[in-house]
Image (cartoon, rainbow, N blue to C red; front, side, top):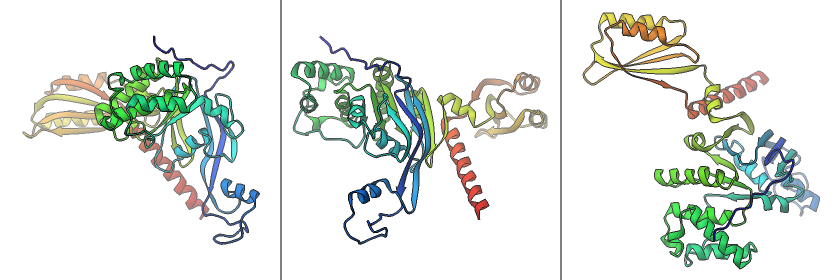
Length: 377
C-alpha cells in the first residue's frame, strides 16, 4: 500500500508565491546603539530591531521593489549573477529575513506576520544542507526526521516508503548513508524535504556537485515526478541556464535587486534579439570568384546582417553562417545559393540561447547604471 500525496489547495488563491513592491535593505556597516560605529553602550530592544532592519545610515538595497506571481503547480526559475538578490528573496520566503517594504505571501500567508503558517506550506532544499547521521541507513535517517516532524508511526512508514520509491532509493534504503553517492545523498535530502508534504518546495542550486548524468536524473525527478506527479509548486534558484531552460515553465532574471525579465524561457530568449542564425553545411568547394560573388550578393540582402564563412582543414569552403532578422523568409537566399556552384547538405536554424539572453540583459543593465552614474556626476 502506497502513500497518496495530499495536495493542499487554498480556495480563491491565485498564486502560490506573490510579492508586491518587495524591498529589502542591508546596512553597509554595523551601527552601534548611539548612532555611531564600533564600540558603545548596549543597544535597547528597539535599537536591536534597527540593527536587524538596517534602519538609518548608509545601506544597500538587495531587493528593489520586486513584483512576482508564481502560480500553484508551476516550476519557476530565478536566475541572476552573484549579488543579484536571489538568496535574500529565498530567505524572506523562508521567514529567515524580514523585508522592509512591500508585501509577500506564501500560499496567502505573510512570512513576517504568520511564519508558522508559511513553514507549514513551504520547504527549502539547500545543497549544503546535511544533518544526516553517517552511522544510520538512509531509511533510518528518514525515520528520525519523521519522528522529529511529529508524524505517527503508520503515516511515517507509508510516507517514507512512497518517497523512497519516488526517488528510486528503495533498493538502497537499508545501506549506510556513508555508502551513498553524491547523487543519492541529494535524493535522500529531497526525501527529507518531502516528508512534511508541503505544497511549495524551494531549491537553491539543486544540481551543484552532481555529474552530468546525476544532474539530468535529478532534473527529470523534479519535472516529471515532483511537479507533474505530486503537483508541487517549485521555485528554483540556479546559475545553470541550461537547467532552467529545460525544466522551468517561467523564469525571472534578477540583477542587482531588480527584475530584468519575467516570462517563459523561449520568450526570454527571443526578447533580447531580433535576429537568428542560419547554418548551411555545404559540399566542400574551392572559394572561387563566382562563389565570393554569391556570398557578396547574400550579404547585400536588406534583412541580412552578417555572413560568415567556415573553411575546413583542406582549405575548402564547408559552411556558411548567415545572420538575418528574426522574421525573414530565406527562400530567396536559398534560391540564389542553389543556382550557384554550392550544394547544400543541411540547413539548421540556431535560435539565441538563454545564456546569450541573460548576458545581453545583464550587460545592458550594467551600461544603463553606468550611464545614470555619469549623468549624476
